[in-house]
Image 1 (cartoon, rainbow, N blue to C red):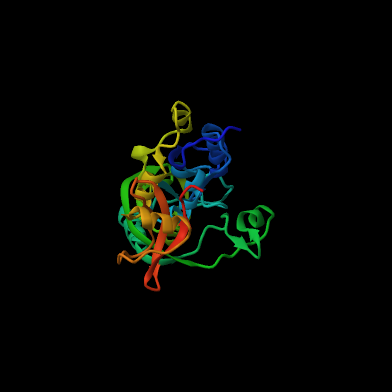
Image 2 (tube, one colour; image 1 turned 90 degrees about the horizontal axis):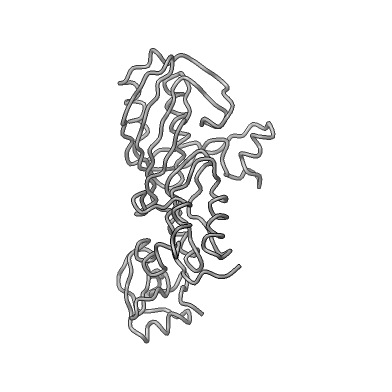
Length: 295
């Protein structure tokens, strides 16, 4: 397999029915390198933004994973599934005809802010070394601990009554680690009729949005599928600082630099604009967390 020379990030618009690993496998073929990873898993049912790292940029994905996310989703009230989404077996059905619009808005509003959310049982979280979804599929009962998350907003875009169900289209902005399926589950539980997710589209991961995303078919048509080369990717992922040749030499060998008073991790660019490292300031120095300079 010939190596693709460009290191950087690709913003993919994931199609339904694919796992995140499926997307990585396709991108390995498209980019002609095995050094490919993803920043933030999407369920097979979900579509939308999946950030892919190629080459040295795979080391940036750890900073992408923890950023905030935005979604568009549809919640069906009146039906509960084992997975909290449309891919799972239906375990209960109850008429939602009596649910008012105001009660839906109130239920969603109670979830906005910093809350403790219990992740969906069918998730990749490990319990005693075993993935929770495997335990559920093996017929085991799984109880996951609540996690502190932040939901910045939940806006209702549309609310429709279909037979005895209520379908609610929402737009959600939230912290990393938030389960949109759990929002559907908890809304339905709070209203006493059950609920699950029937559609999910991720519209943003940090500053990476659908506006710049390519389908896999679109990427295959490009001469170079890496749409954000390493330096540009670094500048999109975090603040950056440009240094002179001497500082670049020190940093490329793992040395530290004088501080600039920049909070949090930030990128370092050389005088030629090349991506050199990610540093954080501690102990009075700007010390490298990762070195990106080519060997």
